[in-house]
Length: 353
Image (cartoon, rainbow, N blue to C red; front, side, top):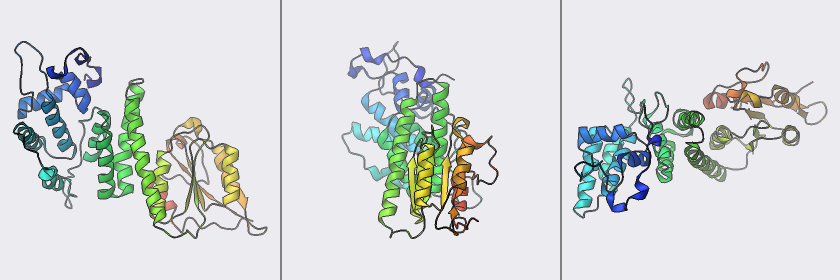
């Protein structure tokens, strides 16, 4: 399938009033040119004017109509209904009338309402963003599409909506993580292309997670228990999964000490000795950074008064540990399982002889 990124941009040499080509519009909105032509053929969602013998050109009003179509379909509204609303918005603008943002609120709420027991989820989607998403929630598709077209405002709006609707655990595991993985796979297979998409998406996700963490900590009293230390192994810069876990723990009133990416071994051991954490969560994205000797050193590091010295439980998180031998160390599969291991019962440290 031809990617919309591969279409040559010829609009740079044309005046703005000439409109934009289908290929340029496809790149902007994050769908393929084939999808735009299909929308035109099926729903009449095409350019208002067409010059005979020339390629189709999309005016600014046409572009706004397509962006509205993308926004509605990304929210899970069926294409036929979304096309009617998008065309209605364009007709309203042509008539000089402002269209209320609440005009589609009821339709969006109906489509995004949680499914009834035993029904098919309205979120499931297999395509539409140009990224290898697989079978994911509709919000994941919409988030990926907004990131591909570099629409930062839409990315942030969808992040906020997902967290409000589903909570952080579901949002991370079923929306954010699949989108990040898809962007990463696309970047690896397409060279330097899509790196800007990954950076945009990562920045907004990080900003959202840190805001949730700060808000949770500000609303709580001083924690009474020893903190959980979270750190990436030396050479590991992927911090977003640990940021997600830090935010969820803060929501649940668990004290945390987030050390961030690429923590040197000496610094990690020193922090464990100084803080005396209830648990240490170590993240490794690749096998090249999964250091079992360091993890075992952390697990055997002790502190406290003589005769009652204690040590931390160590959780190995991330795909980098998949081939490692980690006998005696906890290996959660995902955010939800890590939370189960980090509840009050699992965090109780026992004296070490």
